[in-house]
Image 1 (tube, helix red, strand yellow):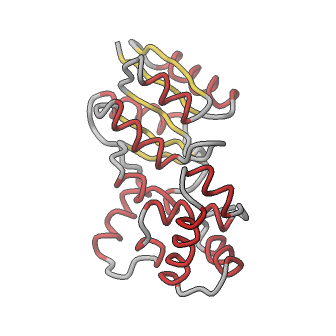
Image 2 (tube, rainbow, N blue to C red):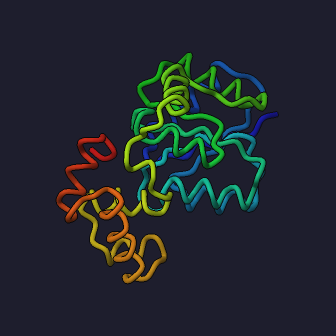
Amino acid sequence: MVNIIIVDDHAVVRKGLIQIIEENLSFYQIDEASSGDELLEKAKHNKYDIVVLDISMPGKDGLDTIKELKHIDPEARVLVFSMYPEDQYALRIMRTGAYGYLNKECSTNDFLEAIDKISKGYKYVSHRLGELLVDNLENEKNPTHEGLSDREFQVMCMLAKGKAPTAIAEDLGLSINTVSTYRMRILEKLQLNNTAELAVYAIKNRLIE
């Protein structure tokens, strides 16, 4: 029996994925959670072989959720199932130790193939992600934001979405001074002057919508 949990803040998405798995795959026991925090709490008491995780949910950031889950259960295999195309987050997500990354516009067959491969211990690499991995190896000049740390990347996206530094500090458990330091460091690395330019950069590079 393979234990799997679907983590998404939209109930209709969770129910849809559960139905797809139940109708097409055998020997799966399925649970669900509506947030990263709920997943982490459940993972303390339940063993999950596969975690299908949306990285864009209210509350805890997807990157932090994956990292904290690895501390609770290092053997959990994460398949990120996101509305964002592979170009935006996939490489960074795979570096956290995730087993795969799928865009929500994928076909049912792609989703089932990913679940089947990951259940057998393999990583799932979509055609687009494969291209990105090859380009990343061959291309010495990656996008400037690839040089940001995971925490800097998180803060950058939150600032670009218009979130106030005080709210960012509260969400990430940081001091306001630390957030301000991150902001200055991000602007310096990206060679930008202010948060408005940062928002334009993030939109241009399809890091936010």
